[in-house]
Image 1 (cartoon, rainbow, N blue to C red):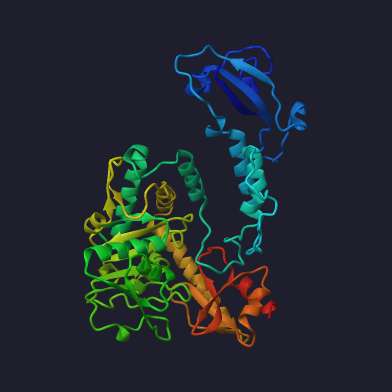
Image 2 (cartoon, rainbow, N blue to C red):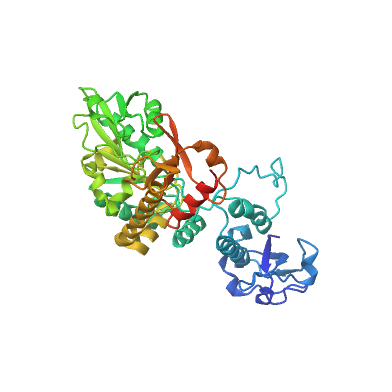
Length: 491
């Protein structure tokens, strides 16, 4: 006889008539089609329902001492269409409610901006043969997810190009995980593919591009753009500044193209005067927001190149800010890469590559197969609906909301720069242009001071052979005064 093992939240037992007796009972109709198609349901555990008011877990006496307690069996007349039934693939209200409660409790705790690396010593050394169940597994890893995580929203976190994410993106990411759509196939993501196409039209239009597609990050965006450039031109060489992201050199290597680094000036911008005279077989990569300093190359440089790509992973979002002028000329590029998990505040794994002639670019980087109903564009095969959190954020905020938040971050960067410039014990590299502040102790070793930081956190970077603090205005809650105070305390 087909058998199903299910877990119920304590307090839900009454939904099943006769559940707590060993005799047969009738499975109620509201249990759903899947349940109606099974012959036997065996209840193996009653777990406590989470009370969101106080987080209490009132476990009944007969289950307090044991993780699993068989309490009854219910049956239904067998239907013609029997099926295997695994309750882990159905919504567990108590488990999900408890997970959300844990999230809310932990995120209301201010936490710390940075924690030491953790080797997850509480986990077994080898992959366990027997599982402990979803509830226990979440409990086991809740500390890793929250207590041992760097709090990117902490007032003292003024460090990397990694922002906190808005609550509605958390919810949309959970929805996307629950439905697990695969955008490779129209059959497995009919609505998600249509949503992706609509959002891409929004974004491409905002950047003066013809179209493009979403990718997990700007490393893939850069590789995809250079791949299209190689296929559409006679280019054999990639040229970028010495301050360009390492993914550009990676892409050139993967594609079998020569790579030439051009020196930068004292502002970390590519020196146009040192570009080769003949660029007809070169892909020129210009950077809008270098990693170390946020510098923006002259985006109209190299007009004679076979292809011009702008790596705008960081500063591309400034198109929606009051400083959009720093991106002047970007709309003249052949391709652009932008990270959406930076200043668009999206969960990790969200970026896009845009093309001036998208149909042409997509044609040369697309593959088909006997199992595909639509061409596979770009490097990715199966992919999830990462566009869903982005769409929710864009609808929630609109362009004005995005502008307000980016401008607020820029103001925070300016405030930090002003505090540093006014303090003799600190030195400012240059006034920030794109929300990246480089600064250091005037008379102390920057790395030594950095190592003593605790309640505030900054990153570091090399500029012209010298180590500098690097504070990136990606955290809307960053407090410049808190950061400066703790740095001064660490001198």
